[in-house]
Length: 528
Ligand code: G4P
Image 1: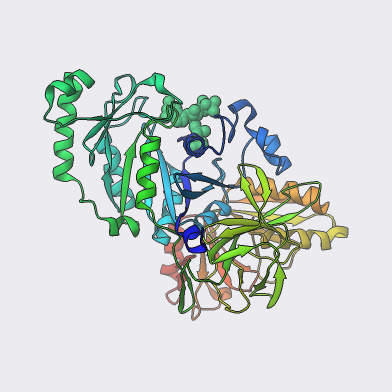
Image 2: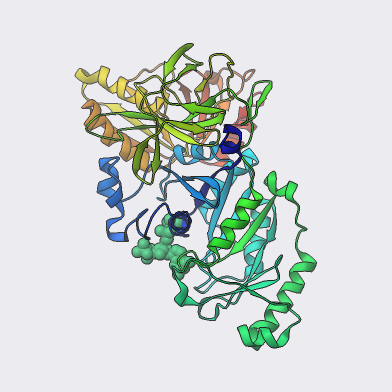
C-alpha cells in the first residue's frame, strides 16, 4: 500500500463523555468489531479490578482509576482507526483537553437518562473551539430514558449546534423495541439476547406498512414512531455534510453499547462521514497530511510509564507524511536533529515497538527530557512550526509551601519538571520565589498526583493550602500597574513563569467588581 493510501484510510478520533455514560463500553465494542480484542472486559475489567490492565502509575493502582489517557489503534473494514481515550474519572486533567488537540473528530457519548453532564460540557467546548466534527451516541436506551426530543433539544440549546438524528429510538427501557434508520427506512429490532452477536440484521420496512410494523413492534409503538418521525422530518435540521465537517451539525445515533445495539451501524456511518486526517496550520502554511515530508507535534508527555525505568514518553500526533524508525528528524525548538527512540504504539495498556507510522497516527517516543508540550518535530529538509497547544485555564488553585529548606533545589526542580510536562501550572506571588508557589490545576486529582510524585521522585514533602479561587485572567498590556489596582478580598494578583501578570478570582462577581473599580483594567481569558 502506498503512503497516500495508508493516510487516506486513517481515522483518528477522541471519545468523550461524562463518567459512566458508557465510553469504555462503546470503545470496547469498537475494538471487538475490529478484532483488536477477543472478549469484553479487556479494556477495563469489572468495577472491582478496573486497574488490572494498567501499571503506569502507582496512584492509578491505588485508586483503581485511569488517570492517563491512552491511544488505541485497530483495523476495521479497510480503515485504520486510532481512538484517543480520555480519562474516565471525574477528576480529569489538562491532558484530557490536550488529547482533543490530536483528534480529527470526536464521538460524544451521552447517557439517555441523564443528558448533558458537566464533563461533557467542558469537553464539548474544547471540540467546538477546534471546529472538529462531533458525533453523538445517545446510550443506554435499554434503560428508562428521557424523551428523545428533549435530549436533542438540550444538545442544540446548550451547545448552540444543530443536530441530525440518524436514527430514532422506538421506546426505551423495558419497552425498547429498537431504532428506526431514517435514511435506509429500516428497523433495527432490539433483542436483548443478541448481546455479543456480531451482526444484527435490519428489517426493511416502510412506515406506511402498518401491518408489518404492528407485527414487529406492536400497534402502540408503531403509532408513536410514525408520529415522531413525521414531526422529526418536519422540524429537524436538514442533513448538511459541510456543517457536519465543521462541527456545526452533530449526527445523533441512539443505541445501547452494553447490548452491542446500534454500535456497528454507528461505526459504519461514522466512518463514512469522517474524513482522512485533517490539515494543520503552521504559521502561513497549511500542512496537508499527504505532504511527503514528515511532521508531528507533541501533545502529551507521560512520566513514569514504567517505574522500573523512570522513563518519560512524549506522545506525538503525526500531521504529515510517514514516520520511519531509525530516521533522523528535526526538533524545531531545540534546533537540532534527533532520533526518535523506542517509537511505540499503544493498544490499551500494552506497548509495541513500531517501524513505521503515518499521518493521523499517534506514536509514543522515549523522552530523555528534551520535549515540551506543543513541540514540533519534522523533516530537516522542510522545516515547519505548528501553532502549539493552548494552555487551558486552571480551575483550582492551592498554595504550596516548601517546608524543608535543605531540599529547596529538589522542590524547585520537581515543580518545574512536572509543570513542564503540563500536569500542573505554577504561579508566583509577586516578588516571591519558589519557597511558596501557587499551583493551578484543571482537575483536583492532579494535587494528589503532584504530592505523590514529589515524594517518590524528588523526595520532597510540602505544605498545601487549598485556595478558593476558581477563575483566572491575564492582565492585558496597557492596564495599570497591578500594584495600584483596587481589588476585592476575593481577588489575588499572581505571576506566571514568564512574568506575565494574572488575577485569580473567586467568582464572576469579583471579575465584574475589579473591572468596575479599575476603569483602565483590561482582562483576557485563556485561549482568547
Ligand atoms: P465510562 O467509561 O463512560 O465511565 O462508562 P462505562 O463504559 O464504564 O459504563 C458505565 C456503566 O454503565 C457500566 O456499568 C456499564 O456496564 C454500564 N453501561 C454501559 N452501556 C450501557 C448500556 O447501553 N446499557 C446499560 N444498561 N448499561 C450500560 P457498571 O455496573 O458501573 O460497571 P461494570 O461492572 O459493568 O463494568
